[in-house]
Length: 246
Length: 198
Image (tube, rainbow over all chains, first blue to last red; front, side, top):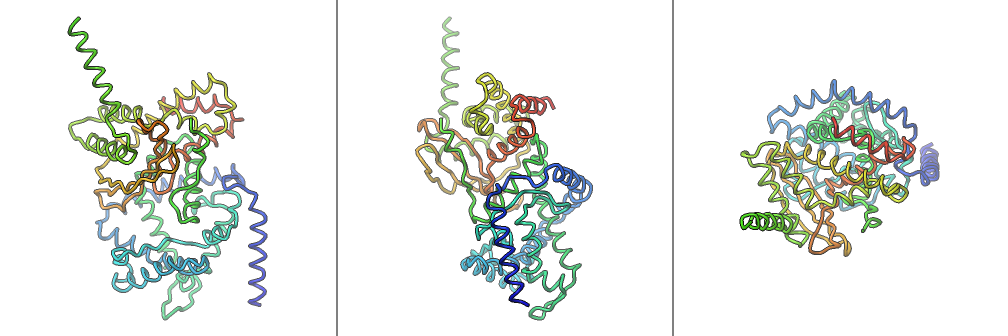
């Protein structure tokens, strides 16, 4: 049965690859619907997320930093299997080392002593792993609440819950090395992480909103560039400036 | 007449000084530009208008706004009429300056470090820097795409903040507007004018 599932997964991967290799990352799946969902997400952000994030930003720095470190530390758990799947052993060392040190010396991840000794793990997910295998992104669309994505990354998002050890012990309520949790733990950590991210980007997002003629397209461009960089583990994307050298 | 000549001379000297204020070496050029900007933008004696004026002047002298305008227009720059491009360039410059001023006017003091410079070609050098915000937020990596075709006068063509190219973001935003409006450059110009009037 397990063998059959693996075979099925390989077939799905192959089909995704064949279907999406010709689709450009910036192609839309259903732009009108995505724009409507984006509008809905913005309304949710204005009404709920932004006010909470502004309140969160008023918390004392040590509490904010501790919360940010704690959620980041748990997010590293998802990077570990993905480092393995990408055969990126250098990053695997950073992820395992960082998680081990921060969870112990860093008191459950509230502090980040690992960074001080040079451990800087990248956040990796299944979408990035599939991208590193050369699987195309497929078309772009926007999910309610969760925001911008594409076919590959939305498939990855679902697969993340199977690969992520934290999801394994919380959503699936399985025990792992004596640790266990509930779905509530999982969603609380994910929500806190979103608030922390939004809080860090209050000014950036306000500036983007203020200076964009088409905010939907700006956010899409930022999402696509960011995913490209994450997959290539690079900070400088290829560009077409060379065509304009006059 | 004598005073008039002196006046013209002083204007020319001031103008010349402002043009050659920064080094022609890309790394030093960016370092000097940043230091100058930080000094002015964190000067509490300057009001918002004075800061905006400074930002506009520095941008006009040191950013390749014309090339940026063409780049953000994408392939349409090849098929549009000369007059349309010229009109677009004028509006784009105003749009760019307004947008830049708005982004920088609420500047909170930060420490900048120039990390390295990598010559990509005879035309481009990427200068890498990092910003260390005073409020304790994590450091931000900023790469400066410096155009060096004229080695005596480097110009900034793009800022890449944490891997996100501002020029590319702008280009893709404009591309979206154009594609939903039959690639009509005049609609884009109208949208830019709307932004300027708001």
